[in-house]
Amino acid sequence: MILSRHIETYDFYRGTQHWRVTDGDRAAIVEGATYEALRGLKRGRIAHSPEVAKNTLELDVPSNFALLDQFRPFPPTSRIHVNVKRIRVRDGFVATAWMGVIADVDDSDPSIAKIRCQSLMSAVSANGLRRVWQVPCGLPLYSAGLGMCNVDQDAFRVEATLSAIEGVTVRSAAFAAKPDGWYAGGFLRWETVHDVEHRFIVSHAGDAVVLLTPAILPIGASVSTFPGCDHTLQTCHEKFDNAPNHGGQHTIPTKNAFGSDPVF
Image (cartoon, rainbow, N blue to C red; front, top):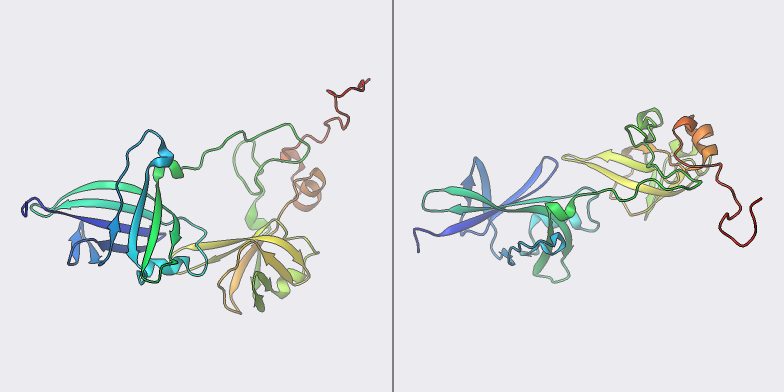
């Protein structure tokens, strides 16, 4: 039994930042990377079901695990991936046991946090019915490709230095240079040491924009700001000069052709 003993390694990563731990009683070097021993690390059963939604993995970790700081007080906007490997101690044979992304974290317990992960298959972003017959444009702003919006976001980017932060409201003189509502539906973007963060903008008035979720940013931080679109043909033409790519059908009859009154 001793000769056939296995340990598992867990590589959590986001951008270039990694949190590598093992359930072994000492640090392990696997494929050139060092995995620190994390006491209290436990995992649930690895499921293999034809229903991808059921192929989740639950982990218990100590509440002081450094990874959890990424979710305090707000979760990151980009995914944190998980790569679980199983290593046979006898000869160092390495096998991939599970791969996925973190779905949510429950750290309400002061000593143990629960991390729920979903498989890569269930985390895949898939398009449903993308285009429908409707007056407003259904294309994502700044989407690129054949039949897409194709507005160049860099052509509309405005660099801003934050002068005040009040909850979900952030202020900058650069915001006031545009008319009210210019940035509504857009987003802020800034770079961190290892990744890029985004926050969506709900409304804009004067030098203030209101974010959908709070952002941990210091006063004086530099952010890139991108305007939003209300998906009307008028805005598409006047704001972005992009009417040929508008995805709506502005000539749809306003009278219900299937109602009781005759159309003609």
